[in-house]
Image (cartoon, rainbow, N blue to C red; front, side, top):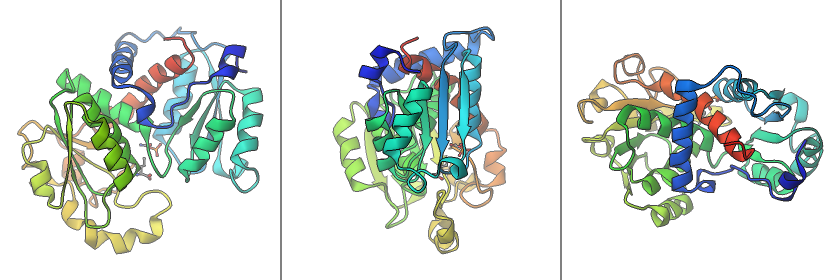
Amino acid sequence: MASPAQRLAPRHYLSVADLSPQEILDLLDRALELKRFGKPTDTRLAGRTAALVFQKPSLRTRVSFEVAMLQLGGSAVYLSPAEVQLGQREGAVDVARVLSRYVDAIVARVFLHADVIALAENASVPVINALSDREHPCQILADLLTLYERRGSLKGLRLAYVGDGNNVAHSLALVAPSLGIDLCFACPDGYEPDPGIMAEAQAGAASGSIELFRDPQEAVRGVDAVYTDTWYSMGQESEAEARAPIFRRFQLNDALLAEAAPDALAMHCLPAHRNQEITDAVMDGTASVVYDQAENRLHVQKALLLKLFGQD
Ligand code: CP
Ligand code: NVA
């Protein structure tokens, strides 16, 4: 359970913007240390428990958070969508208040971003956004770590995101330009990132920039990495058929990757619909860092948990 100090002021991670650019850079360094030198006997979170409240399915997020807690000496309790039925069986207010009596952190994957905010407003322990309709901030930390370890620095990198202007795109927009990354979006008409988030991202851009293109080839020209995500997110499965022809020319395939820099990386948060938004050839090719991104979820979330628990 939370210590008295944590009850007063739990530090939440609901958006990538909840960490300053410098905090993110420090976190990436810590994550790299954990990746290289992590000890199997780390006990910094001994006696601590995280509840994982998930309204949607997960492979990476669930397993990486559970393993992160275990590797730091703590434990995790996974609560499936059927168990909690957030917003149906019980609202976020009561879920947050009750869980705060048992556990030391809440990791929540929700449909509505308002629910993760309500959890944070009513919890006396840290709440981590494990994906909402607005953002996927833990994913983007892992993606930044992947770029950082491959390229040694983030500042000055050029990154293209091609496809749906969704939660992953939003988190990228809110953080990449603030770290000096030039971000080029290519999205179909009507599927751009949220204008409010784009305005926020523009305002927070430091030495980096953010630009929206209609033509994927143009967005990708000469960039250091090309990122894509599913054409339809969890909860939008009924739109899959209608969206396919709209997104087809935004597919990350060899021809599109050829427009990028010769050593450009191909990125995807996974799960991928192979040969829809990304081809087998790109997923399994030499440019692909998709499994590094997946692995880095573990390392960066360990660093995040340590930070939120004041153990970094
Ligand atoms: N990338 C990601 O969040 O994967 P899961 O949905 O499997 O957790
Ligand atoms: N945009 C995707 C990300 C999955 C990790 C979704 O929300 O389903």
